[in-house]
Length: 237
Image 1 (tube, helix red, strand yellow):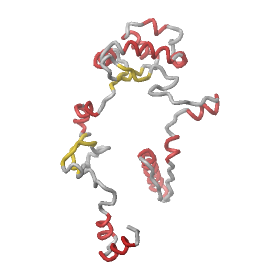
Image 2 (image 1 turned 180 degrees about the vertical axis):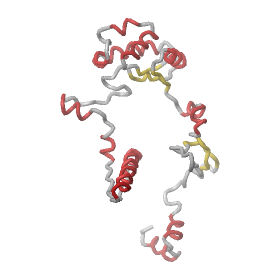
Image 3 (image 1 turned 90 degrees about the vertical axis):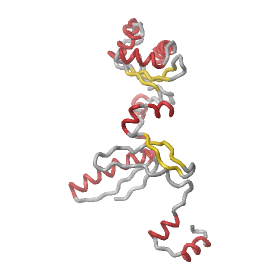
Image 4 (image 1 turned 45 degrees about the vertical axis):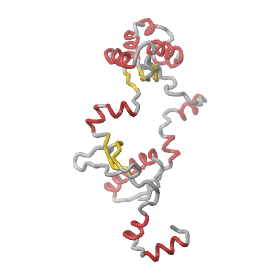
């Protein structure tokens, strides 16, 4: 099995491919090449972009934080200058949102009466929701929409994440030694979690590329000091 990894997205698809290939090997006894291209990994996440162009000639353009044709589902600014996401594109959820906003008339408005109509009038419905959200704090919007069973969530920054009890309970934030600061720093934990073989973060890694070259050359490649001197003189290392 041979593979070349790109960045994390390519690595994600490569991992899936390796697992599938191992399953195939277990069933058939045959190995195979897992071939991952970063461009194709990105393309796989573009949903209906290609079918839309193929069948209706539509070319998607950058749409910001919203999902084009799926409304309402976007980020909205609150009175305290925070951001919340409100997702109520399904008809019954949209009805609950309208009631929570004290605008039940919107649910029967021909422009917004169903999923397709709201997609066609996305700017208008999102302008109405944006105005309503901007009159309230993030906490108020979240409380109102949670009570109404409407999908809502705040956008967390680093300070929010550090204080979040869910991240703490999951062990998602761990302290580890960082040589650049010569002290412990807080950073992301291990993903995913394993019940039988839990991982740990020992340190942040070396500050400079190649910090462990000599260890590798000596311990793994069994090169002598004279070999290293010559390789350095030749510009190889």
